[in-house]
Length: 396
Image (cartoon, rainbow, N blue to C red):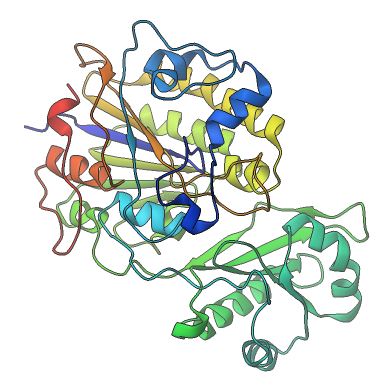
């Protein structure tokens, strides 16, 4: 019989817990997302995360560790060569990425790529630089509306993003252009991790607002993951948030689009009340997208507090044969320079009502212990070529 009938893996997107030894190679010397937030804020209200042991794993500011934590916790290093969303999530499910995705932060996209995109989409490209999504809409939104052009931009991450006004561009046309961009950027020299449709509404500066109709066009995983094995084994694999986009639907049996991280937790709580057998895999993106990239410490702290409140509800709903794992996919230190993700260790905090006691586990050097533990729980073999060892025996 399965040790746990259901496992919930919740990714607090970008909640890193300190620099790895190789962080300077990524330009990230001394980064610490959670630690620096706590230092700047002094205290934040996270009683449920504290109870599970997060602050025993990593604390700062005026926060204190929990005397009797109920969860098991450790620090995970990243073995892949990267610090982006896809690399982190793929590693959780067994894929070690050695060739990093291309970034175009400093130069914008090559002229050859832009010309091909313009020709095939039938639209002139404006922008073509690294920028904040909200700022570039303010800068170029009126021009896009008035001329019929399309705003193309990137960031410090491996992405090509296209903005389109829902009233003048049309969502279907925006998605069509993103599909073309995805095809074009399959070339090795232009290989970005994701193409993202960024729709917005409004008619003039000061009124523009991005909508929840974002859509990610990610590369398919470079090999079979634990998700594929679970699905092939007849288990439920429920994706919440952008999980389905990150894995291009590979191994997913049911998906739920989230409008926000709060909404994602509400969906997870609702799923917890339903019957299923397998994995519920959740990504909560607002930590990263709204606060980390914008270097907003206070907003990030408030987002953690919002999560903690819903975490309290989820903990009440968990059944005796449920296992909860909280983690992150990379860092995004809101006190650091630039707007890029940061190369950091991530937390692993696990809890079940079955656990006899909480406490520290020995740190691991790969996120892939998560997928390996899920696979062992359901008696599923890890796909060939994947990495990671299970720590399931320690989660009791």
